[in-house]
Amino acid sequence: MTTRALSKYVTTLNLEMIPVATREAAKRLFLDGVGCLIAGIQGTPARMVANMVVALEGNRGTQSTIVISNERASARDAAFVNGVTLYSVGVNDIHKASCSHPGGCTIPTVLAVGEWLQSSGADMISAMIASYDVIGRLGRATMPSHRARGFHATGTYGTFGATAATGRLLGLDVETMASAFGIAGSQAAGLLSFQTDGALTMIFHAGRSAQNGVEACLLAREGLDGPKTVFEDPHGGFLSATSDDSDPSALTGRLGEFYEIDDTSFRPFYGCTYTVAASSATKAIVDRVPRYRVDGITGVAIRCHHVVMEEVNDPDPQTLLAARLSMQFNVGLVLVRGDVVVGDVTEKDLWNPLIRRLLPAITFQRDDSLSHWASGVTIRFNDGRIETCEVSHPKGDPANPMDWDATTHKFHRLLEPAVPQVQRDDIVRIVRNIEKENGASVMAAIRAAAHPDKEKSV
Image 1 (cartoon, helix red, strand yellow):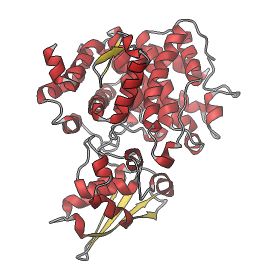
Image 2: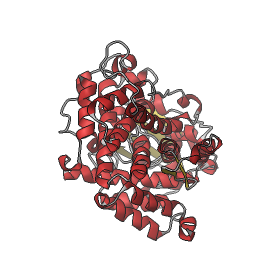
Image 3: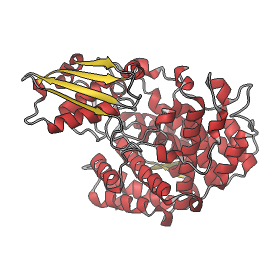
Image 4: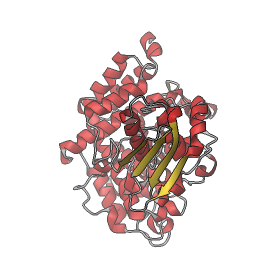
């Protein structure tokens, strides 16, 4: 049975079974996610959901930390708020095969449950890898039909990923884990309709999937029964219900031999999955043009697959979320601001007159010979020059990976000047040697970075 096979894999996975290179990739992605989480405390969406938890008196719990407020809550509610906080920053990781952002729902879950249980760092990384495997394999089993139907993978697959991470840290047995997956199947949700008007439900999905994953495992542990064939059941199972062309074998093929975390990309630029290559190509052109001036641009053509054109064609985004999903805005952002890896894209950028003047000049050219993840950019200048660059594997892609130096460089750029150097360095050191840490010590370092003045006075 597929569900039980995945359950056995998740509950028995330990760090010694995992190749060193995969562990190191996981730690780099963990650091990247922590950077996004801390950067996200400056944003409005995180404050909204933190206030909601307080209004419901959800902060009366003592298990885990809500990073934005430095308050404590249940592990379930902390995972929710921290998931929204992390995912609100448009530079967290990408798993292309599943069209998902696994770190947005996995890392807050691992942090919340790990802090509560004081889990070892080794167990936290094992739980993270298990979660990415479940998310990635669900994508391979149900895409592209899943997305074509209108489902948002970070919300749907992410719920099962968070369930896997929580179950691994709780030490659930195989049958209870399968039951937890079954419960998660009745919680896994997320619709792509946010793309129409740039609504914040996209960000909400990451937090809710983290919250639901914790809840599913706690309910299963208490004895609530979930269907133990939730993935493969032809009558209302997740694959048959959410995809017209599913492949159940993708859930278990080479399980324990190939790790989805090794096929996960870092996001070097603000934007979404389909805009990163174009942003990278645009930056390459800007860097090589002598005496570059944005007011010298007369036109920009983006060559890409027709699916990309359909997904990210928005020449007039009205919200920051819509801007994050707009090819025109993201290319214009790079043309005006340069290397945008920071998490401080604001309303000021959304309405920046230099970017706004560029948007009508940025057009598409269909080229279905390119993959969904590649783009070619051609920029015309008023002196007659034409500059072109094509990017198939942007920096951070598994085919063009970010090493520790590149990962820490992004981490520091993301958090300076809000977080002092000493706190940033402390987090890098702790994550790089996380096998020697536990959930409480990892969260203590995050709290110190997120609230340096408050922590100093404690």
